[in-house]
Image (tube, rainbow, N blue to C red; front, top):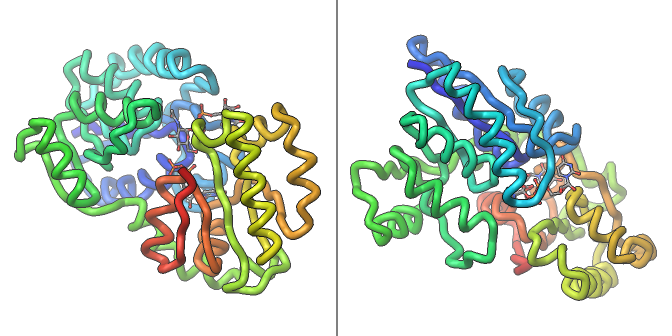
Length: 302
Ligand code: UD1
Ligand code: UDP
């Protein structure tokens, strides 16, 4: 059996790692790993191959950044001839990014079966690009692997038949549990000059939060207040870094003396920081789940 696994963005790598490990144990399965190149910075991609022991991708499509339609179309354009050449029995997609949607569309039109890992999640807000990606991916997928009961309920209420739905748990959390001890042993907080249990970790990257000048300014006001009461560590996503510059907010953030702007962190480093934080403020879907398992209070910034 030939399976093509698709990755494109940072969270995809964290989700696909345990799947690749499991598939590698099955001698009758040949797995081909395709990286679309949606995320391409060393800190958004290569670090995760290194930290999670993911083997090198067999094919790298180099699509890079673009508008919603351009990025989705570039993945489709590059992936179609590859899937025609590979003719897999199954394409596995994870999460809800543009690479997930694009790969699903290409595979479905080539009559290749699609498995969606992390199916059924809904925000019920179609202004979010991810929500459109989830709805379309789920409606075209043949196998829907869900992480929580709400995923099952949402799919059922959309009329998906029970045979397609498999409630299997959360691969992102499998990765977390595998690496948690190593992350804790590294003493990460000290590297950034903070004491365990005393600091806040912040991440922000949703377009609705960071692409709007007044909205991002209000979040900076909030962070200014938080750093008056505790040290703040803020690994900045490249989208957010670009917006801080564009909106002329970078200097204001740099002036906040108790807030450290960090580069995007490698996986083990980030989990090491997260696990010992006093509080986490985030708009990341994955980080909300991880803090739940780690037992760290999390405020969702939406
Ligand atoms: C994407 C996903 C989002 C996910 C996030 C994880 C979509 C629609 N969005 O959002 O669901 O939560 O990834 O991090 O698929 N950039 C770089 N270097 C990189 C990657 C991006 O500089 O390696 C910059 C570019 O300016 C780019 C911007 O970040 O335009 C946004 O990247 P993109 O992949 O379009 O969306 P994300 O905001 O990363
Ligand atoms: N993450 C990381 N380094 C960082 C920020 C996040 O390793 O600097 C990890 C985080 O632990 C989680 C994943 O990236 O596993 C979440 O990705 P992101 O927030 O980019 O996307 P989302 O989950 O919102 O789709």
